[in-house]
Length: 112
Image (tube, rainbow, N blue to C red; front, side, top):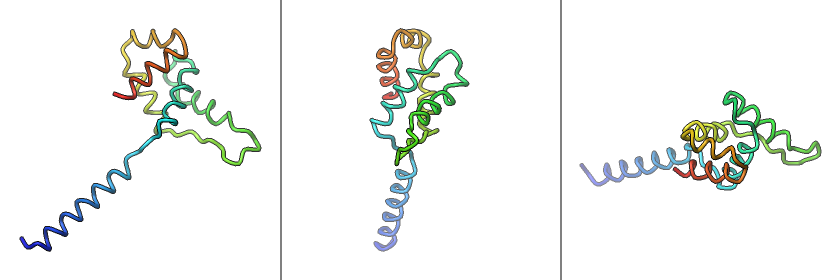
């Protein structure tokens, strides 16, 4: 191969890698912490209501006069709910003991 072909292939690989990185969702630590805290305030006995309840809390907290309204991010909500589903029953029971403990367990679960 000539050096021009190798250079073109290298640039093409770099562009593909950059596009793949850009397309994967990236959430700030603040957003994750907010969604975990909201999740820990909703009821955990019915997993089919997680998203509905989280959406109601997040979007329901907007004031009518707010210039920037907070919208629910379904992908992050799904990630939080999936993290809860992946917890062992003992951790789920421990998370039910208090909001602070729930946030610790869920934050550790998300970090995995």
